[in-house]
Structure formats: structure tokens, C-alpha cells
Length: 110
Image (cartoon, rainbow, N blue to C red; front, side, top):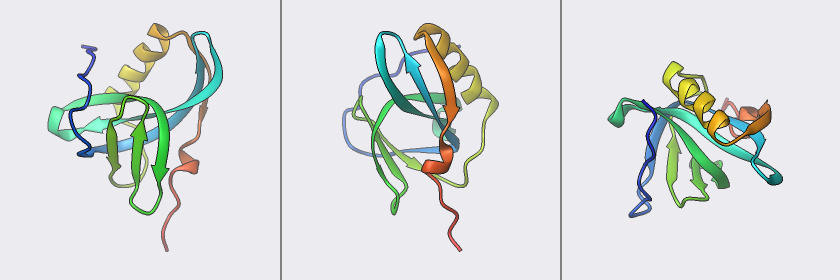
């Protein structure tokens, strides 16, 4: 089931696993935007974020245009439920020209 999530009430980060980042053009917006996809263990649900506004690479934290804050956990990957939500989000928002830009958000630490 696809459902919308309420606006955030605070700046507490939501931990997201099995995450990746996609870039698209959607709707009437000519600019490309980045969106976080992943799985929220606490909710047992996939998630697609609004457009990413800023990224703290040292802390692995993303803040989105909705004001939500995500803590990236673990290495990037994909989760079946997140991909399902992403597919529906793209259809609902007329998104196209998808690119995987996860590499811009993850650098392996040696």
C-alpha cells in the first residue's frame, strides 16, 4: 500500500537502510532533483523522499525539501519495497529521465 507521511514535527533523523539516490525530472519542474529511496525498519516500509536539499557527508545525513532528516545507515543497496514505492511515486509525479546518483552520496571509507 502507498500512503503519504505527515510533515515532520522535529529535526530527529529517521534511520534509513538499503538506500540509494535517484535523479529525475518530474511534473512541470524543468530542474533535475535527487530523491532518497530506502527502507525504514521501524515502520517496516519503503520510503521515497521529497527532493534532497542538503547532505552532510561526514555524518551521512540528508535533509529534504519537506524538512525531513534522514540518517543513512550501512552501504547503499536497494530494497524491494522501496523500489515499489519509487515506481508508484514516478507514475504519480510524471517523473522521467531517471539516473542513479548514489555514488555522489557514498564514498567507501578505507
